[in-house]
Length: 337
Ligand code: AHG
Ligand code: MN
Ligand code: MN
Image 1 (spheres, rainbow, N blue to C red):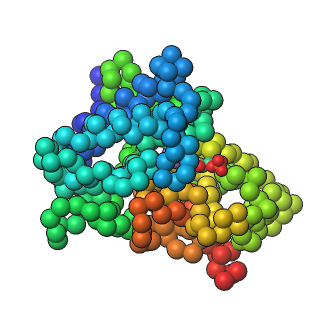
Image 2: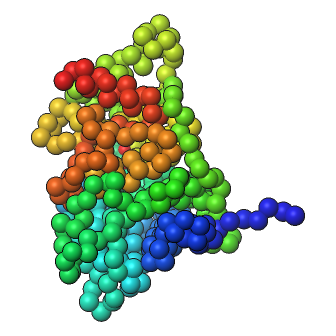
Image 3: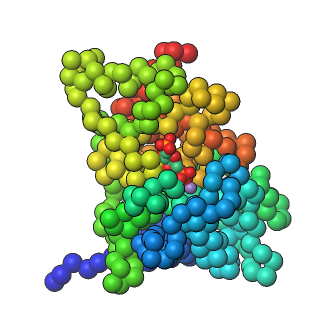
């Protein structure tokens, strides 16, 4: 008998049954996020034919010029998630403040955060981009919902994942029970389980960092990369390879598939900023996925998932991936301190 395909729906139902890991409302939420990603994937695929490329005439709260697809993806996620009764509120890279579910719909107990379109600079050049999401539970000690409810450490996430729009559209997910990957079957219109229990090798010979910032790096990061660049003749005794896609989703996806280390560290360009990437909807979900796959994630000094956020759009220094490399980076930071 041919092996039966397992859809995302079936996977989630089985997770709910087996371990009670995902309550019905969370299952619904994840189905809705996946449906929204399918529709973003459609828009991404149409490209110039769908009139979705190029820049919109607006800036987001981070002072970045928004692309048309940033706005489209944000709207798709909001419209899909607003009415189902599973959410209390949403927060996004593209919105200054939280979006509370309107009164006309029932309010659920979950909070959803997303980077609707990660890797915006790659949209117009047809390079992989994605959607990153993180789910928290709303604290139940008060009625209503406010921004402070979102400010929970990454360890409190109940689900996290991303969808990558590349040569294939792939959804990668954790509910705290390992990492599973689903590939979009366009004929069937459904996500099909294609890999379970993804594991990141503890060692690697591949790093990802934007080398053009080298002169601005802090000393421990410079030391780490210098040693990689020294190759076989250097202290590491092996040659390293480098990749930088400029879409965190794509770089992290590669690391989940074959190992590696990804860094977007603090640097001296804007010393008052902790880093470039955002803690709540980029670093936290990715760090949890990486940890669930046996890797590690740090800001150099602390485990990212332990950081207590102080604001929605907080930035953070990020180093994640193969465990032994992340440990080495942490050690270099400790030695400097
Ligand atoms: P976004 O498109 O959501 O703003 O995120 C872009 C981020 C991240 O995906 C990527 O790793 C990094 O910015 C790329 O930065 P550089 O432009 O410095 O390469
Ligand atoms: Mn991003
Ligand atoms: Mn984005």
